[in-house]
Amino acid sequence: MGKFFIYDFWFKPAILDSQSVRVFILVLGVLVAAGIASQIIQTVRKKDVALKRFSRKLMIFSFTMAVIGAVVLFINFEQLPLLSNRFLFLLWGLGGLVWLGFILKYLFVNVPRLKKQLGEKQRLEKYLP
Image 1 (spheres, rainbow, N blue to C red):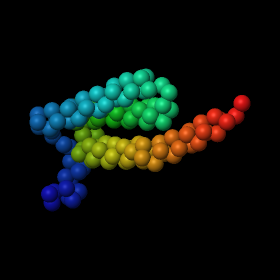
Image 2: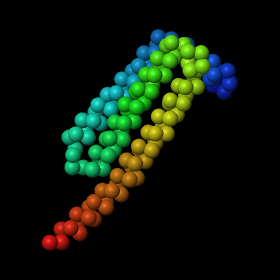
Image 3: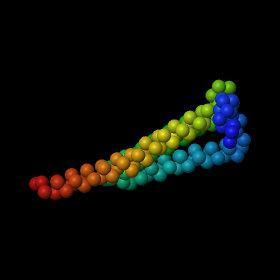
Image 4: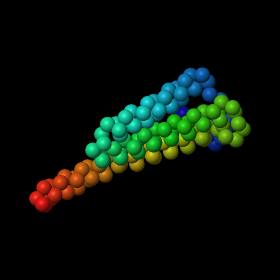
């Protein structure tokens, strides 16, 4: 655990073993599957605008993170001197967590507010000719 705080650990080229590569490819596969599932949800739920927007955000996140992760894995596989550092994996992971945090904020903060506004609008339009 102490090696995570050493400068050389993050800025030396990372040599991944086959088990790490398999796990990383599995993570990329899960991201692609989540992107496909959210695309299906987006096409099925056409009337629910809030869920459709959430599905779109999740789809863009999943496919973008999968493509960037594949590029990082390829760069590491080719062992490019500057770009195969562990720091890129750290940036990829932290960037994904921050982006996922914004998506979850949208789901838990904005979606209920949008549904409340939509319900209020439908309630008021019920009485209009």
